[in-house]
Length: 183
Image 1 (cartoon, rainbow, N blue to C red):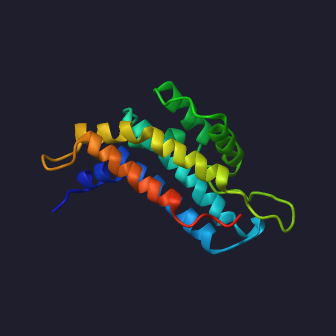
Image 2 (cartoon, rainbow, N blue to C red; image 1 turned 90 degrees about the horizontal axis):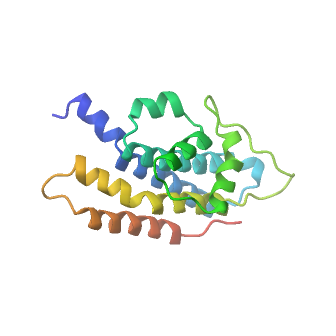
């Protein structure tokens, strides 16, 4: 039987956060690829994309030693604060497009709720910048997350760090090549 403390470690390690980010990215890509909704009706898509960015940044911070309770209590849903701390802890400098996308969604990704993303009537969302930002982050942090996992949590039969990186990136590549979103 797995103890509660063991479950909490499994739920909050860097690899778990990477997978959460990837799952949110997959969900928003799937949802936006199946339904052509205007911006007013696509708020869930924005929210899912923001969650992908948040969990990607938290995955990197966990891999760099930030405790899970600190992420929950001190960073909450602040994308700019998490990005700033990640940069301070060695995240490669993101391309401008990544920071622009993150900064565009950040005011809507609030601690107590997701705030409506306003648009012109009848406009359709362009989620490509958010997809690209999440993809860049997950690609960039895969080596750090894999190294953290193999150093602290892997079993003897677990894949090597290099094999883990290949698997993470293959999963991400498959997600990004799946049905493109309707823009």
